[in-house]
Image (cartoon, rainbow, N blue to C red):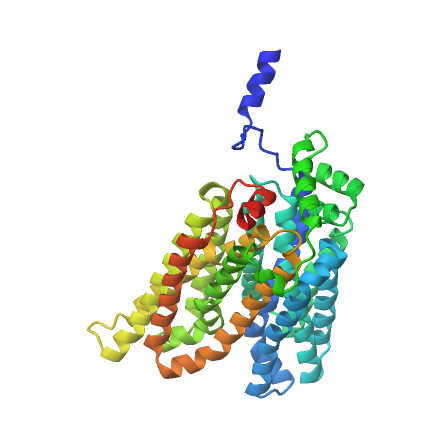
Length: 464
């Protein structure tokens, strides 16, 4: 009987320290599903303006500049949401921060649904932006803090998968329903999440930080399973939390101290390189890029992008805790570099009038390689690493700064892209390719591998 028990124990996956890896509990899956409903709202919000454009401009008689403001004000709202995200999340906890995000988004979507003029439309879009700016920080942080180290990467990357699914759903459904109905669809995951938040636990690490020890023990046990021994994990979290409690809560200036500078460089650097590698330019203007490259319509290219995006993001989720963060980032960044280079070549072939006119094939191949490669790693992993590397006492201010950098970069690239294309289509994509190449070097030299390590181990090594 004892030998059989030992045999069963040997069949369990082991971590590096020889302890059995924590199993995937039902509550852990449910909690993650509830959290990534916010990511789904994020995707719907980002994808909304493209299929809604014709209907909104016709029904509300908007000019192109007025609709352009409607499209871009989402990013302005998201920057505001990013600025307040760390403070709110540390003040009220991860669950209530998600609830506040839901309220912002519900009010925003309803304002869009009942819009009679562009004031209501823009106000609603701004509120949705504030909500998703907060979501973009709190969702990956919550998932990282509730999952065991052997599952954390894959679970955290579901955040990016649901953003892709939300955007893809909006592109498809938006072709068959009106813009008001599409806005109502945006309310549904918010209501689902608000209801689900009632039944899931708060982040154990946040509970430990604010001194709610009984709630901490109860939440951690529920997340790991009733029969799982959580003593060692609980002691490690408590010990690290007590250590950082003696340090004051970091403000913006404190982030630039020597002990935090590496974490900050990695977090800010990854977000900046993610955005300045051209992802929003390609997503927002893919249809125009395909037409400029010689396609009669951008629709076929957009459909191909969606077909590639979701499976590659799913592959990234599956590989995250097997291959590790760094290898996926390196492959992903190299792929985006190649994709941008091929798109640049497609425009160069047009300018130089190469034989057999390969511009269409080069553009399609380049954008699909770029989209697939970005979805594999650069789309989700920077958010995963952001949620892992910052100690609890600086997570709020550092997370706000990193999230703000992401949204600010998104706005800069989206705004500047048309001007860059007027300057030089070839130069624009070769510039993006150069930045993606720089990302490979940045990851190789500075980004730590966090696979298979507890948050406390990662944060101690980065600040040590």
